[in-house]
Length: 262
Image 1: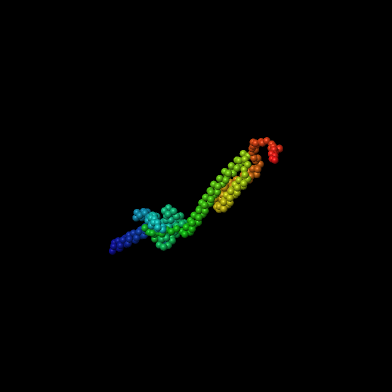
Image 2: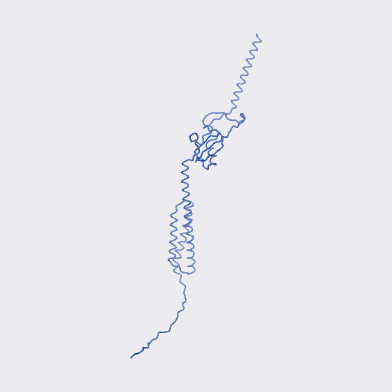
């Protein structure tokens, strides 16, 4: 009886030792396990590439509807909708701030995760353009159109100023050569230059447009000042003397011969 009792005691101690060892190894395994907190606040076990030989990060294929256009993209399953927008930016040309992604009839924020929202492989997303971005683009297009129209108007005025500047140079050259110019010609040329100055004043714009207006305005002012100086110096030019050969005639007869009749 003593031997049997001792044998049973040996089995019980061996069993308790085994249970203690397994519980200790289980605690050590739990201590070695790494945990991570997802954006939703849920605490999950951190994925490891060595677990079952399955990669920790998987890609999902998404179908994106943008109006009548269809796109197929592949992104990480744990990516955010903001990262999806970055991929779509290269496909559609829309900036991230101009995109709205609808999934399950809800607009998704840039910081929301695909897997938490239930996005799976071959899920369908709806891409829309933000109405505010459409309005901003329209305003930008109108602004660019006004700038282009201002550039074209300044270019036309510049061509007219070039033609008038050539006439100013021709008048200046003639007066320097002591050739008198009619005053009406100088006055008319000044009026034509002033009309171009009025056209420049009617062109609205900022930045480069304003700089170009200022440049052409200085050209007009310079031409007008040159004509004012030439207008003053023009009467001082003496007309060239012309030698004229005159035909001479003899003096008229002093007495007349009268014929008498009976």
